[in-house]
Image (cartoon, rainbow, N blue to C red):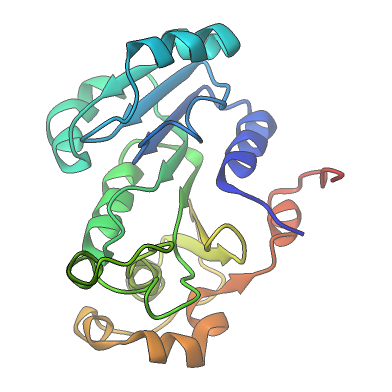
Length: 233
């Protein structure tokens, strides 16, 4: 079976009756606009849609009327806006799909964790690159002009959390280019890398240890882990 980040976010919102959904890296709004939640927060330094598209999407999905849009990078959002935005209501689900770079993605998760509900869930896209080109760093991707899917080295942020955070349960669903699922709580297992060791790892290393390092799970595990009814497709 296959799942995508929009389906997972929707299932979690419905299961836990979460009120607030945030998305880092909205781009054209493909995943953001269809999501239904009382409060929706979009964060992106360069939205690829205008006021007319926002109006159309609000007509087709009423929860978009109350959506808030922050056109700035996620570092600035968390430094300047987050405290006020989440003062009265924390996030139930946060999709991290911004800059596909190890340290940036890790920073997005660590910043988001400060404003998550106790049982909130962070979904991180691009955690399981299928090819060396897809796993290239930003500088490599930019220099070589790759045209196919680019996931970057986000996978290293999974290794970092699984090596350093004893307070987080982290695994990756084998679907939609690898969906990292991060929740507060005791981890299923830990790795023992130092940040310096993670820096030196290559895509070839990942290929040899993909399942163990990413704590890779089949897509169906999502339903089992969260006690959800599997949808018929």
